[in-house]
Amino acid sequence: MSHVSHRTHSDPLPALTVVIPVLNGADLMRGCLEAIANDSYGGPREVVVVDNGSTDGTALVASALGATVLESVAGSVSAIRNAGAARSSSPLIGFVDVDNRVHPGWALAAVGAMADESVSMVGAPYEAPASATWVQTMYDALRRHPSTVEPARWLSAGNIVVRRSDFEAAGGFDESLVACEDVDLCQRLRARGGCILAVPEMRSSHVGDPSTLMALVRGELWRGRNNVRVSLRGPLSARDIPGLLFPVAELSAWIVAPVAVLTGRLAVGIVAAAVLLLAIGVRTVMMVRRAALPLRQWPPAAAVSAVYGLGRALSLVFPGTHRARQQGKRPQAGVL
Image (cartoon, rainbow, N blue to C red; front, side, top):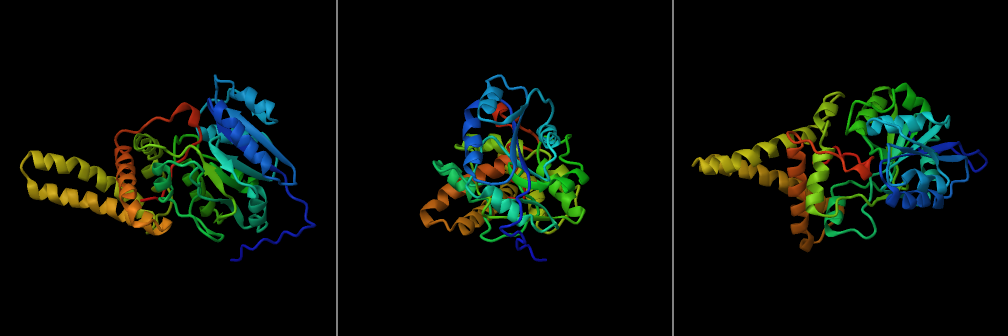
């Protein structure tokens, strides 16, 4: 299937609605909206900020910067996004999180890729912020950044554009989910025969990437929620299995290793420790290869790999809660 744009310079650009879900994000809103404004599109574009009951003046900031604001929308982030999508009749709906900063050319790249009517959704993996800490730099190495347009199994909901007709036919975001709702939507779109494309030109810096190891643990406790539930909904492929098995294996290893040592079962403890080190090592190698990390950065990569795995493992038994102002952060599903 070819996904080369068929749009010509004489074709009118379609209307695009950009939906931003938010709760207490006044300090982040200006940067998000200014980045969208600086992304010269040329076609009809509306920005809808859906406020989940903010108390910090978020709605006033958004309104002053020209956004349409829907206030006091209650429910999950899925419900907030769905409310924003229902606000307009644009054929294309973009979803951008308040802690994301789209780069120039974002909208045109999305529209160009969606000139092919078989394409249901386009987007790109987040990038680390410009002033990234070492944790954010290593965390970004967990993501695969394609260099050319290619099919994707899922895309994060903080940086996507979806065709309204396909979005509505699939039922929108599942409002019963508190995380992984973007993975679930992608599964349903693909089940209907829709194509999902990763478009490198749809760049977006994620200022909400965890800046410390503690923040990384807290974030993965949240992002790991609903991962198993959502993964088991759709048809599983070989690429999905590691994402399901690694957290279970690492959780078991974290529990078994110290218990075995304390009870004198050294051999069992060694096996458990080996499983844990293998998981951390596989993920670290993946990070090194994806980001072409030099030797001096292997230890920090291993540290982030270990803490990431710990957070995902603990999310199976201790699901975390979302920090209020970061409504819209989504799981990095599919990362080992």
